[in-house]
Length: 435
Image 1 (cartoon, rainbow, N blue to C red):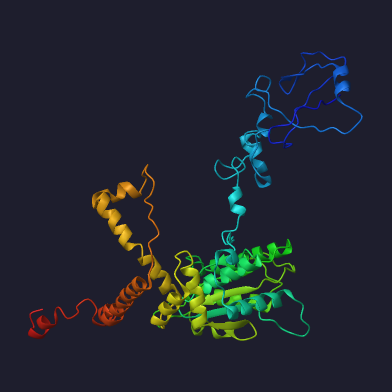
Image 2: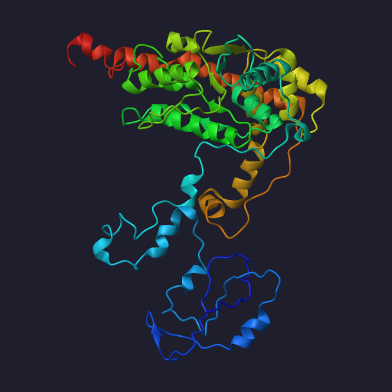
């Protein structure tokens, strides 16, 4: 019996082998699993096979391999190794199969299920695009990450770095810039994932994401676990915040990971298995709302981020880097609004396009906006970059400040909560007894 070599597929992959059999002294019409045996010339086989190495690959011949050929589909197989069981669909009697929709008749998982939902990849280089990283911020992050990968004698390095500060100061974005600078693709979590309708689910997710980061480190890639707005998901913001079982378990899980960073096990796994240590970076606005033992110095190193004037000027230079705004104008803009957050200046830049959008709406008509913007065959409108002068930017900034003052001045939410649904509208009727 011999096997012939055939031509490679277009993709060059080796997925299957088409058997070609030669049986001496047998009937050429003998069937083998319902198929006829093929008689071939032994001389042709010996001519094709040289004394050197040869490769056996698969080909598809539509004339020879019909739909009745049970192995034809192997050549076109696109599943990964986790889906090999789907190849056997229909080849085993249904008596031995699980019910339809829940067994080996269907691929259990798709390839995308193996891509972590928390893996964040950055495609930009902050040096080339002109982004600014505050030196103090970068120093703190680099030192913390480096220390967690070192073996320092007789020193207990805190696993968690907590970066906290005012709203809109660029904590998360500065972290992303440092990660991009270091070539790190972090495993991400947000505050919204720290609560669930199922008790224990957030704590399990934290362990799972930590293990995913540890697996990446074990494969030779630096990685961190990055949790955004930890206080919003695990903190207590006033007396009206409900303290749930998941809040307790999130705090307890982070404490346990900080104490045993190389022995983090998933539920149902209780074997002693060492995993690489993974630095944990968390951001928030007020860490005093968190469970006090979690933020103690041995577990969490805290860094209060309050950008200086130079930091604010540097970040604003990056915001207006494509608008050709002179540095002296940026300094003047920053000094004009000293108490504002960094994202305030990003909102000023967004306001610069308002006039262009108004002109476009007037040209197409209000009733035609939907047809032009949603599922339209035409291209979306493109605007020339508006010229930004310091006078126009100061005007937009004053408008934003006025809106902030309106919110603080009116405070309707406090009034509604204090007087329930009645308010002042029914005050006279209540006094007169006619309510």
